Picture 1 (tube, rainbow, N blue to C red):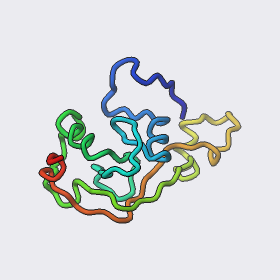
Picture 2: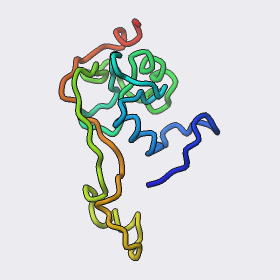
Picture 3: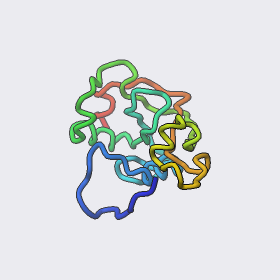
Picture 4: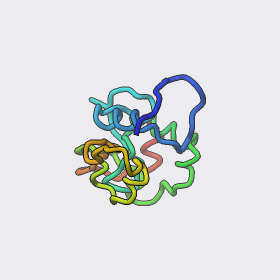
Amino acid sequence: MCQGDAPGAGRPRFGAVHWQRQRQAITRGLCQLCGKSLTASTKVSLAPQLLSCEPMLHRRCAAEAIPLCPHLQKFDWSAPDGIKQVLAYTTALMTFAHYPEDEVAALLGDDTGIDPSRIIGHAQIKITRWKSRSVEWLMAE
């Protein structure tokens, strides 16, 4: 899965994942919104799952994202575990080997000769320790 990369050029495509930036954010520990390091920062996950493809955010960036992102506006942020302060996590790169064979064939075509197990599809984060937080906590910074 390859996409062109031109940060700052064009218009945002809300809801459309840029896979290269997604992988970089997770594997390098970068904020999904601002792209800066999450090291020594309060890390926040807005993903409903503990195993997710959604990169983490700085607390301030998460507070800015909720009212601006059409996708995030659909969620009830008062629900338990809706907003997570991430205390510990691990990351993993997923390959097409983790996908059903028919989906891989549909993406690659039948006669490419490409080994699907050698292609990275996306990165995932697994949250192992967290605190559930309120919208008030998020916006208080």
